[in-house]
Length: 83
Image: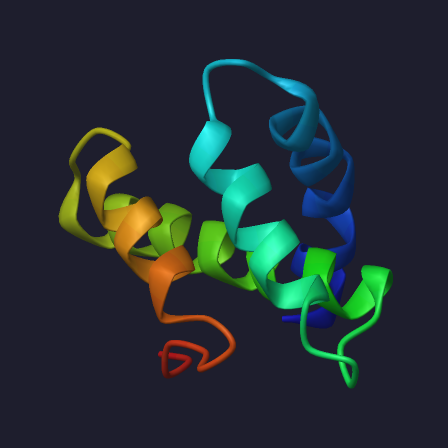
C-alpha cells in the first residue's frame, strides 16, 4: 500500500491547489492544526483516503464518488481500514 500512497502524492498536491476540491484543502488544513501531524503525514493520510476510494470503485465497478472521498477525509486523522 505504501507504493500506492507514494504514487498518489502528486495527485494530492494537485487537489490541494484545485478549486474543484476545496474539501481536500480543508482536510489538510485541519490536520495541520494538530501539532503532532506534519505536512508529509497529512498528505499521506489524504492519499490513503484517495487510495481507499479508488480501490472501492474498482472492486464495485462504479464511478469515483467524491461524496464518499469527502466523507473519508472528514474522518481523518482516523484512517479507513485497509481491505
